[in-house]
Image 1 (tube, one colour):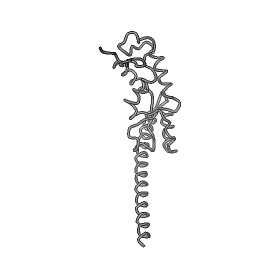
Image 2 (cartoon, rainbow, N blue to C red):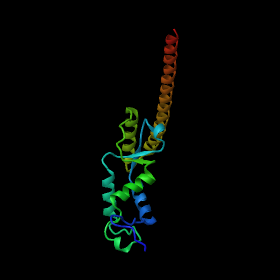
Image 3 (cartoon, rainbow, N blue to C red):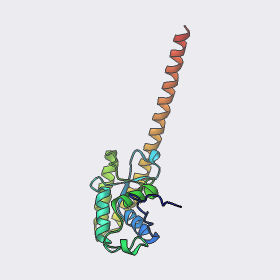
Length: 179
């Protein structure tokens, strides 16, 4: 005689269909994210969402825009918003966590970059730009990229100086210990 195991408290996992998962990923990627300024070398290609948006707000917006999305193959479960917040969070953490982040990034821009960005935004917002203004936009973009490369070189030099100083201090303490 065979006794079936107790199934109380065990849910059958719902398999998310690929179309809603892809729609969710596309929705997340459609939001603007910015690159860290001074920490580009360390963060690689990771981008950060603005601090005024949270994961829960983004999920709520997705649910509002897709109220009848059929997310699972189970017909009885396809009523209302199917993708719950935990599913949203799990998909984000599995697929997008390495390239996007909801945490606040530090305000780490210099005055030169801020001034350049503000001028670029102002010029780009103009409807009828002259060729002189287009040239200024091109010059500002070039200036900004050169400035960012220069800052990377300076930070690399600073790291080198700190490592050389640590080596000298270590050698000095070794000589004092020997005696």
